[in-house]
Length: 207
Length: 383
Image 1: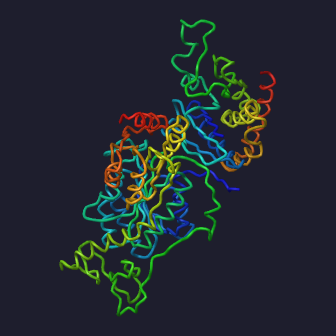
Image 2: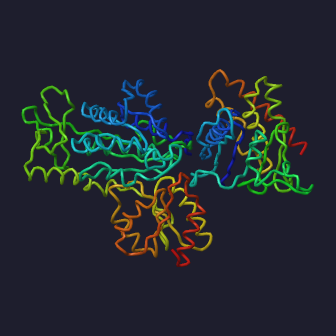
Image 3: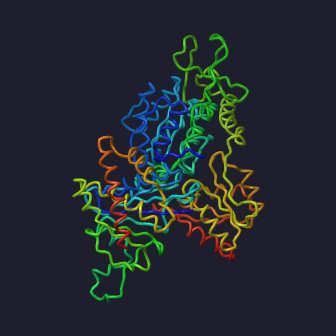
């Protein structure tokens, strides 16, 4: 089994931290993982991403080539993933046209923030899960910054669309959060993750 | 079951150095190696070790040689431009037989080049960068687990042979997080070698008199009664300069011989699907990971490809490469440079089969499908 995930967002949205937590959770689960990221100074502007490869055996090629799941946190990140010009911005597009994501497998899980991203993907091609991720972080948890961890909660539940049970258990994620964030933010992030699981379940029921 | 922990490549290198007994680090920060220095600055004081940031890489390498002579296991880490600056004192370390580990997290060169992107352009410089004849062991791990193994191995060989050892990484390895099976790094589960100490009384002590293994037992500076002298000039057993031709010839022959005679023990390769391979890929580091996937992809297409991943880059596995060349129809050497190790592979294979190249020096890694394309081309009889 080789499972490739990308967390992509705008600078400052914590995409790389989310990827680190995800890879740590995989390790907690007893799976092998590699985590790579764009190396650069995207703190204030631009698109930033963190990639994770998960496997039940040691991993050969450490970077992603064909994604099984992608978590998209902002419109500019979405546009960055789309092959060519997004349908939304192309006046010559017809109604039946849909966006295609670069280096993403057909059937892949695509998790998007339903308020921040206008997503014009073909739902027969991808398993699309839209959830109010940033809104939950801001309104329920009071900190918009934890939207990356809320997104991981959604991801955790959504992997049941591809596997019989979640790829990684809630417990492994909670342990990974303990290991990856500063101590005074552990509870906040754990709650963020659990809220993400909730809205993930709701989103799956809707879909 | 494996006990898996996610570790950052550069941090893993620092942690393993501490496990190997490293207690001195001098360096000057440079991307993509800086996290090694950061981690050492955090870990060394807790072990009563010394971390010092010097004014530049030249001074850092000098401090490492000095600390080594005072008896501490010492290391420094750098990248391309810093590695060039360290060459002078690296040669000095080889000449005065100061055990130390020099880590080079390779980025794109020459000059300041591509600071944030990977390269494999110091394969030749690691051995030939400093002037004069020499043989320096050079190890190149391929994953984060192996970064830890090879860091420990680098210290062990440095101490045992009293020589500098170069540990090559690349930007991808250094800046990658990966699961490590930490069980093998629990106390007592890995070997740590220490340098030998003089076994003669002070009055019979000659610092540079070699033992049977060609390695001298030099007392740490400051050991009461054991007086010594170190110089980059050719020297005799006392450590003082000499121009005696026999002495000078013997010194250089011994310095090279002490490493060369341990080559069989030091040699380390990984073979993947080589048993029935018709096309062998020989490479190292990050590129070898792409090559391994390419081997599987080629086999799916009915091409019998195999991989020889070289871990001990120098001294090169001369005999092994020759044997591989005799057993296959072609060899491909992909590397993130314009063709360096391929020269050594050509030399070692002695014309037994054609040797092809896949080169790149633009900061982008080689992907599995690119190696696959090249393998298919070779299989079709192209080049």
